[in-house]
Image 1 (tube, rainbow, N blue to C red):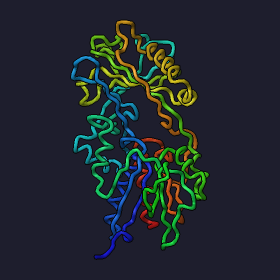
Image 2 (cartoon, helix red, strand yellow):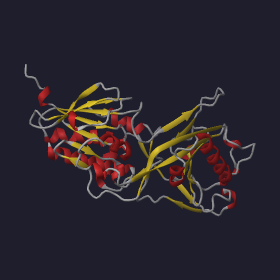
Image 3 (cartoon, rainbow, N blue to C red):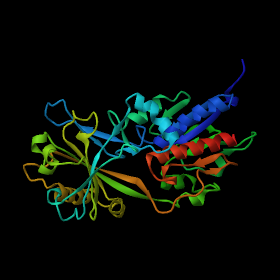
Image 4 (tube, one colour):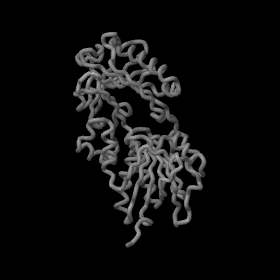
Length: 378
């Protein structure tokens, strides 16, 4: 029998977020049409799940079969390029992605006035650029992409140790990278190493190497975001500004305060079965300043601001309150001109939505550019 293991191209992808998953999906699609030897991809993900669009849900302590549900990360995304539209089309056909025509209200001076006392400017999303959500939960799309991968293994709860030049094996025709987890155990030898982690984490991975693009990794800045999640037992006890017959919005965009946006979760498509659920994203700049503060203090500040905006009383206060901190949530400042960051001699590549606009479509764009670079250099 012929040993095909040496002929198999093995690629490691760090990060099971959307950039990593889409990279694997595009790689297996393009590889099978342009190469005639086997491919094996291993995605290393430090958490227990995949996809950047996270969902949190809770059931009340009562015997109710209903639950609260919050899209605690990215709320929705748009698709503008033809290539990205083509990529998401099968997931729309499968009802995993659904268009969401949100009603957005823009208000100012949110830190001193309640929604009831502000004349909001209401606008509706235009049909030319609809926004999409994942259904039934925001995690569903990432899981669907992962399920579609036929040449890929995903290793959860695995942190890759920082790289060094000594892990390169240059004995063959091309360099190969020996990877280890944080406990020092070997996790395999790979022909390509693709890092899709946030840039601060990527910089830590390459700090002790001579990676040619190492100095460019931290050019973009990333800011944190706190997410406040509120739940009510029933719609009858919602604050007046959240009552359906008294509001014209499903998304509230705030200004001049520590809060950024308020989302009505039970207003989204196929979400009518949920208990009243509201997600609030804090301002990124404020979150970054307070990212290392005592979480109880952050919780108190955000809850006070939310009560000021939504105007609840003791009779209409939320029954459930939760807080989550996203350490690397938004990309700000200077963008990279040359992406992805690649060292062809080592076959190392760094990419991520933070290289571009920081959007979900940027995940696709960076993944596509990365796979083109890998295939052309292989």
